[in-house]
Length: 103
Image (cartoon, rainbow, N blue to C red; front, side, top):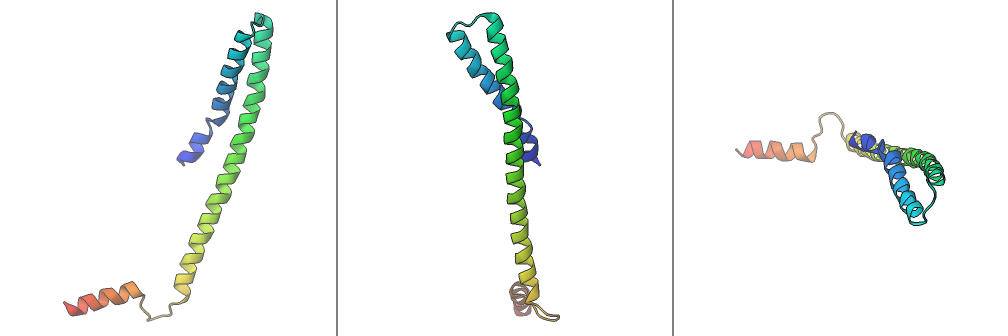
């Protein structure tokens, strides 16, 4: 759950970083205020959408990764259960019963 809530900040962080870099470059190059603000607005809008795309790709990647992990867990659970029939004990159950009998 924490990963999903952290992903909501991706577009904002990317936008702020791009705006900071753009502001520094525009100040160093001594752009007039009107041009500065127009270019900064364009940078903010473009990089906000870039951030949304990055967030959706990251969510899709994590969703695939999580579903693969769940599939592996399900396979290991079913393999462990297939080998046992009624009345058979697992190795851990057998060890526990041996320890109990020794006492």
